Image 1 (cartoon, rainbow, N blue to C red):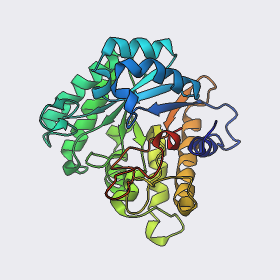
Image 2 (cartoon, helix red, strand yellow; image 1 turned 120 degrees about the vertical axis):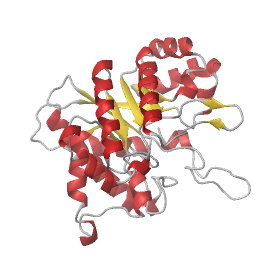
Image 3 (cartoon, rainbow, N blue to C red; image 1 turned 90 degrees about the vertical axis):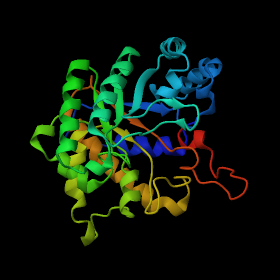
Image 4 (cartoon, rainbow, N blue to C red; image 1 turned 135 degrees about the horizontal axis):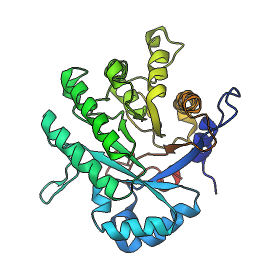
Length: 312
């Protein structure tokens, strides 16, 4: 069964301009975020078989998943013909017995640089085909610290031989479209690759950007700039008051869905222009998250939608 979100994603990304006679292949990743079976290695075999059967080409996972049993994780992905995208969180990635998963523990440049080197090496050792990095700290803005981090990250990426994308994520360097545009415009960062999760920017700016709105006259140029750097899309639909609508198939979110789909089409056109080959591939991933991203009912905390179906 091809569910709604995949149909919308494919419709958005598989309709590039006819000017491109050769198309890169769209590969779909399944996020393991919010998938209960991902926490239990004894369930991975069945889980990965299901993911493959539903037509996905790979999975995206964080340290918390693969460190549970590295060898079994890699072996079962190979068994089921799934590729691995490693998501890393600089100055994070560890489990604190008292507080749980550590997402971001520092605002110091040296901590994030050391963490980036360590986590990308770990991802390469696992055989990752792509590394998605939540990079740096939002307090650095677009100044010297941010530029220094990204310049070093590009050197590390070149040495690794594994592509690294930096996500447009809150708390991180690309948290805002304004800061991101300043950084992506810098000549020394021309080679920087991004993961476009534009739902975060809707939340940060309390706005679903509209090129027809005079207030958003800056948006088309910023979107084109992002598209020029984008090698991965997190296809989550955000809204003006948060990073995630409850269910993108609901009619009340038609405007938000239409806006995001149009942004993804712009990104696809830029990717097709950069990769004019039938042998090339680009990645996209439905990435709606579990509670508290996914809204719940009061008192019972019952999720208002089935996350697996939303991301199917």
